[in-house]
Image (cartoon, rainbow, N blue to C red; front, side, top):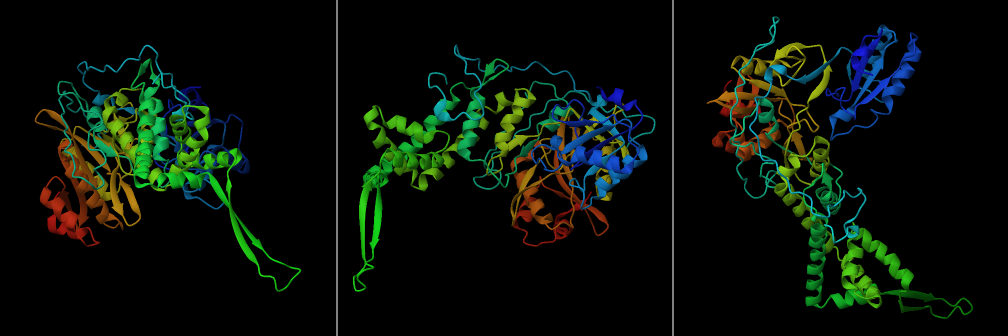
Length: 573
């Protein structure tokens, strides 16, 4: 049922989510729950709403904020009672699994701001590699490498929105290659570049800013990630495949690692001894004489050759150490005839038992995945959004930050409360976006809009719509989400500016400045300005991260109070 049909009924609509980001009506993954029963009793309303939101919000999905929201459509529920229960969700208590949630009662649907409509773009060559005569069908997610057939491979105005200038301009955001090592050394190649001859829009500019994946606490094995990416590359996407031979390439590369390891052991003379040891087990016996108290106990040991069942048990262990069918693939590689299978299995078991081999496989797999994202990044960005998300999921599972871009939302559900602002990339039908901002955040936004910013984007804290910048802390790598990305028109071009209202009171304030300075050193050419703004000693000061001297000062700062940096190197904002 369309939302307008539901909202015309007597009742109230409530959106509950674990973050301020909620889903739009056309999001296929949104959790939309309906109830048409008449309800006025407070206990009944509490039970129904609790059941609606308890399970969906019991677990947070860090990688996708769209999955952290529940839409409750309650057409015949008592509005006062519903608002009372919603307030309990907002405050949280011991009886509520979804405690501390953001509750939106006066929801408004946002879409791409009609006053910022993109200019017509020139035609671009988006030709992908066409499928071979025997295209590879997308295998299932559980398919391993060994099972792939080798043969196929200004502020809001009450009178209406201001019409900003959105003339077309070219944007050539070049990204400098970083120094070896550090957070930004994994991948400095832009995921995609705007054509120098193509017209751009504010949406293109913001969507092209470099972002990074932030490593999760729980990671999937690099070999598993490589396997899944190979399957996606070989699968058809609207009749087009990116690399039909990706599974064969991945398996060949990993098998070559095992071959290299085997050659090293053979050269050192260790392999024969390891193989022999893999095929036998030792039986230890301790004999004690009970009849004769003076009889001495004896210890003996004997060597037993493993039978087929014993070898099978050890092969299962080798398969866990060499995942995704690599162990069986290597046995097949060594054994050309049936009578060679046992020896091939023992060799594989011996190699898998060396702890340095799994580490080498993980390193090679991670390298291949990162290289494929560089080689096929342009082709991946041309895929439909759901297909891109499958690749992005693999990229987010990296054990170190990898370069990516943000996925701008096409629609969103937000609260209608707050100050109405113009020129946000998402807005209601009148071109307005409502937000409740902190004092220093509001000051920055007012300043930028009054200075003529063409458009702006309020960056979410997490999720695929968020610009993330990695920074290091004592607890590991975390993600900084700058509050605002602005689009300015400079010399006839639309360019992005990153302006972050900086909270000097936070414990990791210095770490965040260091991370942003490091990011600016790598991607300064992608922005017109990269600035941190803070209220220090009753004055708004900014740090210009595009200035190499200021970046060096931040990098070498050993203090814990970020206000010292603003006092020493900041200028009036």
